Amino acid sequence: MPPPGALLSRRRRVGAALLGAGLLAVLAIPALPAWRTVYPDRVALRPGGQLLWVVLPWALVCGLVAVVSLARVGPSRWLWRDVSRGLLVSTVLAGGVATAGWWYFSATDPYAREAGLVSTGPGAGALLALLGCLLIPLAGALPDDPSPGRGS
Image (cartoon, rainbow, N blue to C red; front, side):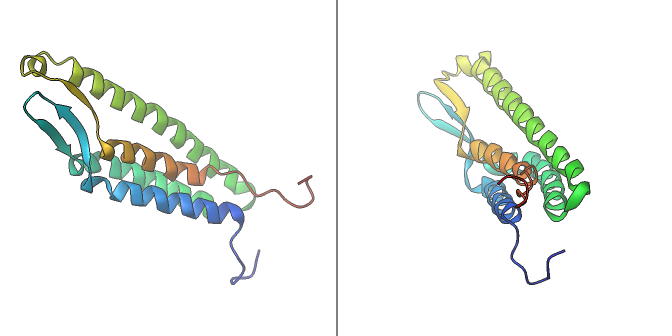
């Protein structure tokens, strides 16, 4: 075990940076529009604060697993790294399916078509939410640092 004042490993430095960037991205969601719908006479923006309450619990669970994965060393780390990888894959799938489904049903809504819907799509807040929720589990899924005796 390294002395308490020793520098963090490269994996932990990069992981902490990814974790911090992901959390900042999630916390910045309320300042941006989550969804943008364009009509001939106006543009309707759905506030990002509505999206925060969906994204925040997922980001906190992923963050907790990532912190445990970054704190662990040795043979017990593989379990937490695999859990982080599973959360990363499920975030990609669930986030992509939810965004695509919302987009599809918003674009094909007959009532919106009657109101003259021109276009609809995710705003900057939704894209930032997806990015933040991908960076957080990625921090915990980083591979171990190569040891000097193993060919690197």
